[in-house]
Image (cartoon, rainbow, N blue to C red; front, side, top):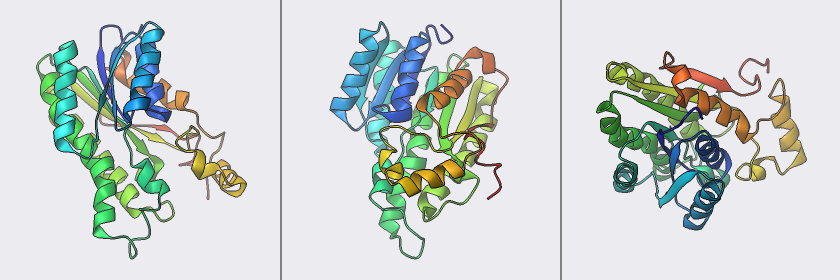
Length: 256
């Protein structure tokens, strides 16, 4: 029970990586608050956790709306009295799948901003409102789920890449500014993780093979990210802050 008695808020927790992290944290003893936009899916994940003996509740939240972010943080504290771990996982998956992100000379300002509001402003707002509740007990862990696009170029996703690069800088800044308050901030850079949310991206056999070739080992599974998040949330990583844990099957170091 590595997270016994800890309270964790996980964004984008209705499917894929977010749902897996919520389940993994609950199995390790954490009380988990899940938030995302899909009410039905979120309630089902929370029910499944509770049916297995865990403690979880769901709050419908769009992280692109600052007022809703503040509300879910307040709800978490009202229900459980504290926040020990914040996992900023929510991403603009629907925008990416719909082709909203595109080469810079083609993307509109509105499209660019829509992606940044989810992928950058959302984590910033979640951190902003969670931080005071971590500063009081002088302890906390912020985990930002990022992407290899923070380090390398990917075709045709300038807004997403810009957001993830900025999220890396924000992670370092949070670690720097709040380390004296006992708060740690780290990011996880993920490669291609296969789950229901990424199925469209690899539906074409050629696309699937392309992604496979980018990795040294294999394509990732949600549990690969869960394992890293558990480490960063638990006390065993107490001396780890301001850094990135790369969970990418060697994609960043593979020669193109």
